[in-house]
Length: 161
Image (cartoon, rainbow, N blue to C red):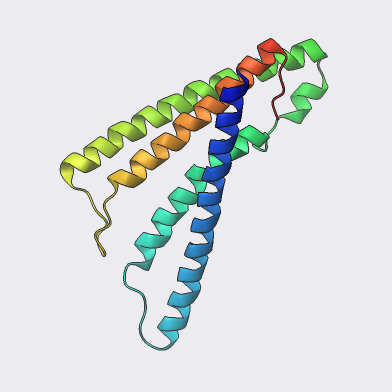
């Protein structure tokens, strides 16, 4: 159990580093594009790069955010209940979130397969979409693992941090 918890923690932390590096690169690309536009030489395909970078940034930060429990939290609901009710609500929300994450991941795998079969690519610079879809699917599967570890910790009394 501890190995699984550690593996999920390390993997989600590495994914957040990828998201951070992508964010820096997207910011640099936008600044460079604005500067180059001033001189009459914009970067071709910047919209595609920023959109795909945004998808990577959002997707790759989700598992880490779930691990750190920094998503939207319904504090008002939990303040009015006993500790036992809080634990039940926590388990129910983690269970629902894991099912939703699993379904999103599976649908992203189907979407990536469809992109691969059809050869879908961005219009301006022909970046293929299927690796992005598969990468986002992996993010949601890892997020599902984060929620599963949190559920196991809730039942075994382990730490969720």
